[in-house]
Image 1 (cartoon, each protein chain N blue to C red):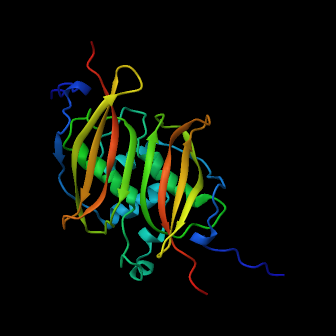
Image 2 (image 1 turned 135 degrees about the vertical axis):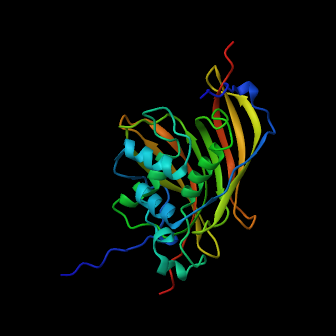
Image 3 (image 1 turned 45 degrees about the horizontal axis):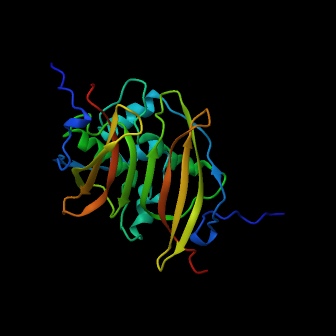
Amino acid sequence: MSPSPPASRVYFEDVQTGVPLETPGMTLTETHAALFNSLSSARPGEPGTIPDLLPLCLSSGLGWRVPQPPLVVLAFMGFEWRFLKPTRIGDTIRSVSKTVAKRSMREGGVVIEERSILNQHGEIVQSGRLTLLVAKRPAA
Amino acid sequence: MSAHPAVYFEDIPVGEEYASPGRTVTEADVVIFAGLSGDYNVLHTDAEHMKASQFGERIAHGLLGLSIQQGLLDRVVTAQVTGPLAAVKWKFKGPIKIGDTIHVEARVTAKRDGEQPGWGVVTVARRVVNQRGETVQEGETDHLVGRRPA
């Protein structure tokens, strides 16, 4: 018996609204902060702190580690984001997201994702909405 | 070595403008950001796939551009103006390709009271511009800035 292969990609048509998706966790380390600060050349914060933009950047990678094929993103169009609590080296973050709206366009479709980043205490440290342009399923 | 004089919320004038130096975004930047963030989307990592895309080649992560512009602006403003982030509204308007050189143009557009006493919020409008003068990213950032002690 050979099971049918799982869908390897999620297209615009496959996106379901309102279904929450939680990622695995990631412990924030001195290395993350050092790599990020050297890459961005942003002014380092107080010792022990994590740069404000780093959890947001890490959450996009965490989104690849959920048990679901990746969304076929054509372009990241924009986002609105709030920074609610600082994160520190040693904190463990995870991301919870869901699609709140989708709109078909001629070339692909727009998907609005609501995302929150939580720390190990379950507190929301950052949250906001991201707008993505997603490919439509190619004609068979 | 002398410390910079302290800059408080009250000292930051609405309308003040800043222009950063440029920085060329390299393949190394994109590879390091993919490794750091874990975002290995083909947009940023598969040169062959991207030949057939609307961009024709790999593009930098949007959030890499955001991170680099933060560092560029940090080089020309005092620390307090771009203090801790409270909010960002951001649009990715065009691709940053490997080899593109970007700089930031920014302006203080608003100031308001913070939610906590002792703090104000400074809004900075920013445009990320490439070597052809095209705006590739733009948005607003809100920063927490301490008030002058009474």
